[in-house]
Amino acid sequence: MAFTTSTTTSVHVLDILARPFVMFWNFLVLLAEAGPLTAKINKLNATSDEELAERGVTRSDEIQRLFAGKGFM
Image (cartoon, rainbow, N blue to C red; front, side, top):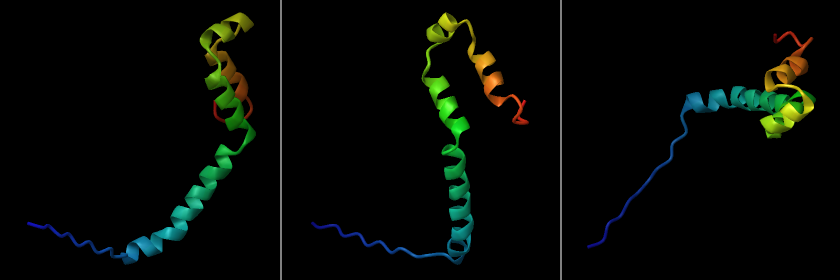
């Protein structure tokens, strides 16, 4: 006995209308992730708590230092 399946793909009008906005949003996210602040945060995330303790700082102190003057905190 054989089974067959058939699938059809349909494109909805709302999907077509949303594409430019989705592309614009993805572009904004790409710009934000490519910024120097994101690179610094990624480096901080890769640093262990022990390494930060050796330098005499805490993760919270470093986050406050990174975001100081940026209007986030």
